[in-house]
Amino acid sequence: MQKIKMLDTLASDEQQALFKMIDLALANKRMKDNLQTLIGQ
Image (cartoon, rainbow, N blue to C red):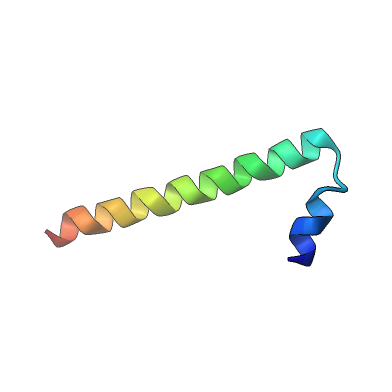
């Protein structure tokens, strides 16, 4: 929680870069989960 609060102290461009990285990680997780579901069928 402390790390999330610290995000507010970053410059806008740094926040946007982190959000893009988080979005990428979540998209990769979703793709991996979907592929595993398809392979398991």
